[in-house]
Image (cartoon, rainbow, N blue to C red; front, side):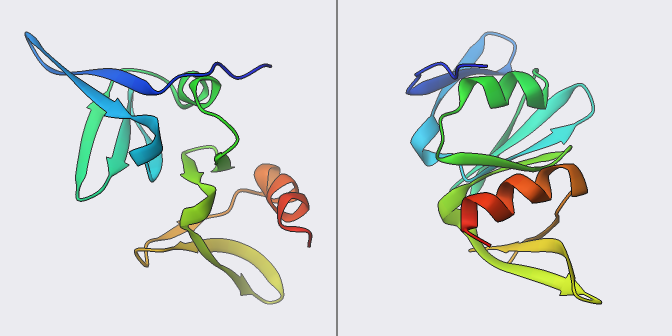
Length: 113
């Protein structure tokens, strides 16, 4: 699927208010029920969308690492393994996220591993 070229995402933060979030500022996105939680800087906002819908809006600066997580590539700091199998990633802010088996192959290819 071709990814759309966008610079901002309009997020309804509360009734009567729409916040504009620059895609370049997004560090990661997490599935959160019927919403996604968008992390940028020291802030996070809820946005009514699926992770797949968000993935379609993002460019190749982002990669899906799990059914519940998309991260900006430059936020990846470490792959963490247990018993020789990579199962988690550590981000620049030291957040540790799971690495889903379905998405691991693409991440490994992208990293040249």
